[in-house]
Length: 237
Image 1 (cartoon, rainbow, N blue to C red):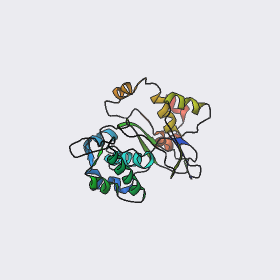
Image 2 (cartoon, rainbow, N blue to C red; image 1 turned 30 degrees about the vertical axis):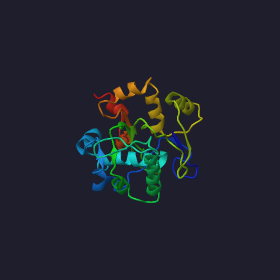
Image 3 (cartoon, one colour; image 1 turned 60 degrees about the horizontal axis):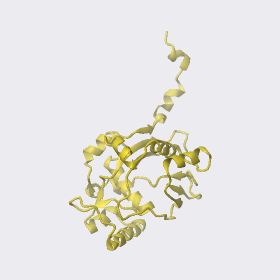
Image 4 (cartoon, rainbow, N blue to C red; image 1 turned 180 degrees about the vertical axis):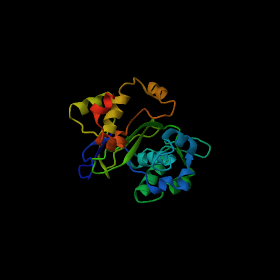
């Protein structure tokens, strides 16, 4: 998990998962063409045709943001061979890609230069949340799971975060309930969901269907509740 910097204008100091917004470039043809392991149709099937942007772009964002915030790159070559980060030269290249990315370089161009593709095979779609209408900042968020690739490990980068650490899901949820770690609903529910599994294998089996497991989108019917008479409608004559 990471902790958002206390100077941020939204959810400052809250604990969350690495991530960020979908950039326009994530949905560009050049970025989508550098995806391996998931087709555009499969992404649409998982998210639905009414997704806010081109569905496959969410997976591109997940890969890019994971590199930006944790230094981990899910990548492979054109044949599907995973990038070997146990090779020191490859790890140096990954670190260089992150530096250029943070300086404003195009993620798709950085991948193309190395002959790499976003390796989407390790990712599993977890959940979908939309902020309530009362939130000062509105956005929709999609969450994914993935194992850490061999030879790589998450690191703390302080551009946007002040802490970064591994934690058992059940322990993280306990700390949330104890008031020791502030979290918004997506992180809270995500930890509670993960805590019920005894192993990564059990979790992966539960997600083999490629569908998300829970969502927080009740805000879509907020307007309906404003004019809903519970007494009149709960017991119709």
